[in-house]
Amino acid sequence: MSSTTAFVSIGDLRKGHQALSEVIETPETGGGCGTTGGEGKASCGSSGGADDMPPEIWEKVKNHPCYSEEAHHHYARMHVAVAPACNIQCNYCNRKYDCSNESRPGVVSQKLTPDQAVKKVLAVASEIPQMTVLGIAGPGDSLANPKKTFDTMRMLHEQAPDIKLCLSTNGLALPAQVDEICKYNIDHVTITINMVDPEIGARIYPWIFWNHRRVTGVEAARILHEQQMKGLEMLTARGVLTKINSVLIPGINDEHLIEVNREVKKRGAFLHNIMPLISEPEHGTWFGLNGQRGPSAQELKAVQDACAGGANLMRHCRQCRADAVGLLGEDRSEEFTLDKIEEMAVVYDLDRRKAYQDKVEVERQAQVDAKRSALAANEADDGVDPDMKVLVAVATEGHGKVNQHFGHATEFQIFEVGYVEPPGAVRLPPEGAAGRLGSGPAPARVLSATFVGHRRVDLYCQGGYGEDEQLPSIVSAINDCHAVLVAKIGACPKDELKAAGIEPVDQYAHEYIEKAALSWFADYRKRIADGVLVHQPRGDARIRQGAYTGAAEAAA
Ligand code: CLF
Ligand code: SF4
Image 1 (spheres, protein in one colour):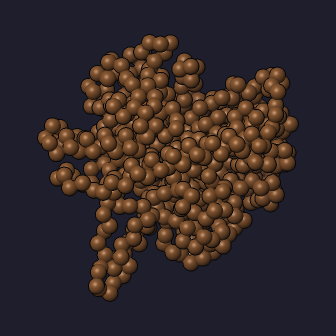
Image 2 (cartoon, helix red, strand yellow; image 1 turned 120 degrees about the vertical axis):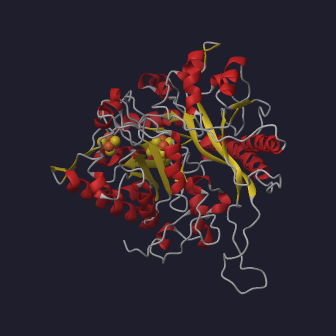
Image 3 (spheres, rainbow, N blue to C red; image 1 turned 180 degrees about the vertical axis):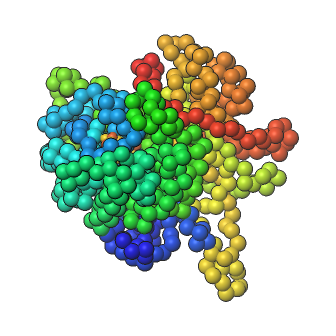
């Protein structure tokens, strides 16, 4: 790939309404969306909407919960575990514990044959009409099991034409399989790329299986790297949307991921998903057994922020299981075991699915409108530091609202609030002067509440009672936030949060999240301006290792 190849960001696509395959070999334009003064600050990422991209790309992403941050509040995905084998070894993987590329540690309950998988997909699709995407994400590597993967995809392509097909791979076998991928209209492919430097790769991959033999060390990492880059370029050239997953491993590839971001951007990656390493001794992985830790919340955010201007970032990944079913962050796989499916009356009704999804779109548009109006406010001249940005945690059970009780939250969504230049703003030449586009004054900044991630927590309310023992771990998970917005909260957790310096806020219950976050922020600034409080920076937060799987049951 020549150095003159250009990244195809959502913003680039908007400029020319070009197809991916048309732009991959165009000269460097230095773009990214939301560019300001030519600085190339990409800002929309997976949060891009219908106005940010050509209709054919929007069609592909609009109801894919991983490729569109907004869609993940409304649409579900499911995985079928038809691919048990793998052709490489990652130091963060113990297959007994599932594929860390695409899932949290935890065994896959049932491996499926392609026939069983199709049956399961049709059953889920008839029960969950907002399930729009089927992914194959292990528990091994989808392309190391090509027959099982493509048999499943072929049958679904024929029998469930409205479901988008998606797969994830380590990339080693990717170039050889691009034709098959295109044959079944699989137009979303995730490649896990943790390095572009084989010396770093050798610290992550002890071996690969290549050309009927085991290859180790730097040589193995070099082959893997070459195959990943080649596969990515081939998919881009064929118009397949690609997402890159990278596992952030502190001390090994943390800073290096900025270069990975740059390299995948050059090759047309649509999104880059930087995920924290999940590593505990009990997982039995090489990293887990040898004390390699995962990143803290702020370490993860720092690397993600450092990639601004590069490939657009996905920040709402839930590192789901290879047999997950439901909205991201929830898992309904237990409702669809093979014996339960046998007893279900499966009616795959395309019209009913479409009618339901039409209703979802109406609700979604209401949320988009509410968000737009909430974000329209201009910068206040209140004497408070204009660059102040803070994080707030939000308890929500969907519909884009602050609508969950503190005690029922198994995760908090994290929003960064502050003033930013408006997305897509362009600096013009100074008035009346001949000048370079981008050299003029900065446009007026606007208030912004940007989703930056989520934090899993242990459920506080168990069996109708608050579990005070859980509070320290909840506080540590949102310790970098200044406030937590909830629908309701009891006296005990309120006191504990206050003591930790996190403001519990329940007066915006059932309001749209962005509106609530910005109202709180305006009030926070006012209190600073009035001298009622002094703004203090917060500390770091801990990323919980794996999901608390008992939580959903306990909450029910
Ligand atoms: Fe599955 Fe992956 Fe397709 Fe999504 S997951 S194969 S792209 S349908 Fe999504 Fe899960 Fe994160 Fe993967 S939240 S682990 S990014
Ligand atoms: Fe495990 Fe996936 Fe790595 Fe294979 S590619 S070793 S299944 S994490």
